[in-house]
Image (cartoon, rainbow, N blue to C red; front, side, top):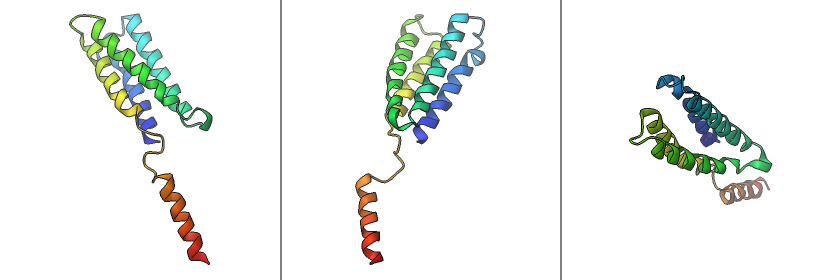
Length: 121
């Protein structure tokens, strides 16, 4: 589930970015970034619960929205909007990582359990 942890870390960066780029006086940017960051955290967190284990895939839509917003909000994109583009591209990569990417494939796990059971007899 390390991919979901990285998504949450990315959401923290997005929530902090209005203060880093000194645009916290722009309430639209501030609340948009905070809301989007919260949405990313919620989707990543829902992925830990088995019935909603694929919720992180909705982050792909959030990522595409960030990229489009960052590219077309102001021409040329300001630093905060360039940040939206980079965060969106990063989320596109991370959201595709399966929840159990660091575990061996299920077939290997079953095969190992079968071999272990055969060796016990």
